[in-house]
Length: 494
Image (tube, rainbow, N blue to C red; front, side, top):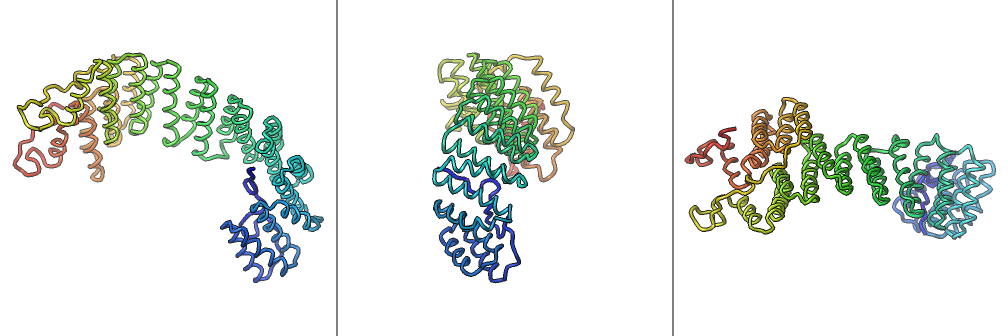
């Protein structure tokens, strides 16, 4: 049995004196109570219980007794000594005769103890009595009904009854957004796990993102958007799931939370066999987040996936060529190389060009022995011969607009460079990354050089091999590090 003593509006707050009316206790009492509170905070329930029982024998002020009794009952509940907790509630009932706050708290605790004793009907009755008799304490009333709903849902597995109570909370305490939102959240969980009505669950998760958005931070909202979309996917409502993901991407402000929702949208379009729309959505993502490799590389990989799903293997290979060109980290380059090799295999029906591509990327024209004019020399870079996907006027227009929107600054040049590469305009991409290198501040030189070489020049030349010489040229000029070389200008013609 799961209990949430203290999950929402816990009346037995562990902080010293939280919620329990205090007289002005003596310093000795405060010192002992502080020690007991520290034990409670450390979940040292038996030690705290012994300390509180000892204090009960020493301190008799009614305000102090109420405070100690609250902590004592909490200890019993946490130790699952529900009978002792109920006895303590009954023993202290007289203290609530002229103290509605204390009386309502005791009644809530009575419900918790009865629930622990699996007396569900009596526990629900106690919780309902709190909401009915103590309307001056709406937070407590809402918490009591939330606990009643939890008894129905968790203990009794009665989904409709739980949903009725949660709807009551959301309606009765509509002005209390945190409690109303919690009721909606719990109702979504009941629909998801008990009634299996995933569409209703999704609607409630959406309400947490819209009606109750002010209650939650972005991380939590992202989670609810994801849950809503997931429920709709499970219910085979793919267009609706896509709409929720798009809504979440638009509503959230931080890329960390927007990007996963953005990337879910082409997946859902592919699942619906809307392949052209999926590719267009991937292009939109790239144009929206051009400097976010965590968005652009997965988006371009989905472009490849969409072509492959149509068995258009030549177009998939062309899209993989773009993926490889734009990859800038070791992990992304290795992953993209695998996708390119897969593309060659699918087009050819054999592994010959796939293996030759991988060898060329690693060793260049000299082959594995790195010596000229030997049997393992590699004469052809098959990647540069792979045609890019066919031109698409709508796609061209999207990339043109995205590029036009970039500022003539270092960051703007970086974004433009990536946009050109993902567009398939490798020469323009290399040229722009070179401009980014020229315009970067001193602190940005390592990154600018990295992007110029590993992205711009890799895409332009179609190979990873030989890029070390480009780095050397950038760092030391044509004479190289030792000052005795004659390194050809890798940027000639750009």
